Image (tube, rainbow, N blue to C red; front, top):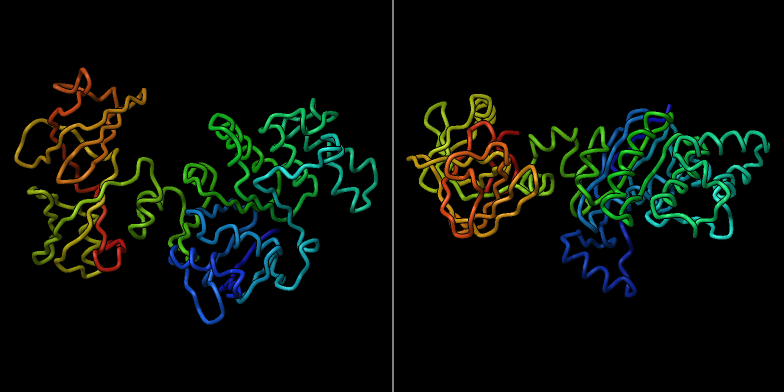
Length: 393
């Protein structure tokens, strides 16, 4: 078993002259500056189940890598408790935590062959040679690098080197495998391939994964659950579908989803037990499910930020309940067209599936073309103007 529990974890970096410049930058990034120092991670709580794949995601400087390094023992925990398999790990040395880590840089020994790189951590444990060979061969087969075992890292591509780095971690059969942005140095095609390899890998090895990335596509495709962080604070924890469909706040809604969600200034009006949204001169009626959630939270009439994902906007003909815009940019993506519209004094992005194009849009779009669009009440997101939380949750 390899359950991991983080309870009220906090990381504070001492504030001194050497950190003056960095602290000023962190202050600009909205990290808290206290009397103790710079608060990099604040009150982080998470229970990770055995063999679960959890992804920490967020913009640069949000504290995700710091959190991972605290689990690894490479950073001291300022406050809170870390448990692995029920054992308190705060003061346990990294080598005794039964974890392995894959870094952004491959960190391979250039003078060693692939086989020697894979075998090195096992030799340090003074494992018998036959056992070492068996584990190395098994890891190489899992990762598809058997034919490269006698090569040195300089003779490998970036994707092959990253496979070796992952292999060196899994030969140890750790309870927890930590991965810190392992694909960020690869090109787009290799990243896609390696994502698929990691998905296959987690099915074949009996370990718990904690994966750090700033790429929300990686987070959505890899994670059983996603932990979204901002300025050292957890914003939301949930499955990929949950954070996409039910973002906890404005930040999460904008961070998850490509292209990002469109936002409109709107008015939410409540009359007895029913709600309407007034935006750009039209009325959108939330679905029954959304109406009930708003009622359960006793949401009153107020100015809101209305969120609509680009793929949930429909282009239609003329009508009284249509919003209007003009095409600024039309990006052909193959199966879809990404339209950038000038509408309501802002940029609005619409994704149109080419198979669904009909009527006046059948032959594509031209710059400055007028279009009419709308959306259903089942796909809108309502955010508080005051604190940016999702009014439904």
